[in-house]
Length: 329
Image (cartoon, rainbow, N blue to C red; front, side, top):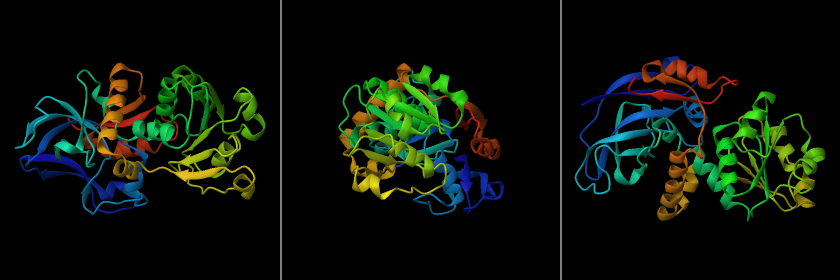
């Protein structure tokens, strides 16, 4: 059968020329495979970096791109035992900007009945990133503070909501003052703008203590500001570089205060984390999405045929949420 997909033919800035909607032949699902009708897929910063050619791992071209999404199983191959037509799933193999795809049964996340497909389409990247960073880098206890920049991003919002479930407190840094009330309503404990000097004002914002963990999605001066809010011997974990500026770390933060500077890459985490543990974490996150305690706002939904407009909108700084693609529209 034939499906439609957004296929990348080269890397670069002229996405209108290198990213095309094309018909592709899709064979029947093979042994242990399922066929998925895609219902929604987000445009993530990693997708933009893949198109530009700046991501840490690039596909062989031409390639159908898209890091995550959600869909419905419509057919199963021989050997499939746990999934059935009608089940909602989130494929983890990429290539999600398409109408249909085949994936191994082991390469999909089963989703609970009743989950919102649009919210479910954003479950495979930002939620596990937030969960892993809150669990794997510091021995946090209820009441401890976590400081982060890019707090209105998909990861940042997940950090706020998962931290609230863990009874951790969050100090959140954003670029625009109009985001403060929105994030407070989401469950953030404190929200400030980038202009606030956390070296001076951090302790008063965190009730006299210092944060036990910093999460950096921006880099540059913003990352240094987070570091200055940390307690001695605490880690700063970098997972993104939205500001496109390198970290410049004063020697004293390492020598005299014992801060550690680490990186998180979800792809590496997925490889290293035992399968049983990954499944447990994803089931927990899926249930949070289903019951509404973990949500990311959607700014706008574009049909797959309008992928270039979706890409342009995803690059806008003043968006109110994620850009999603509806492959069926």
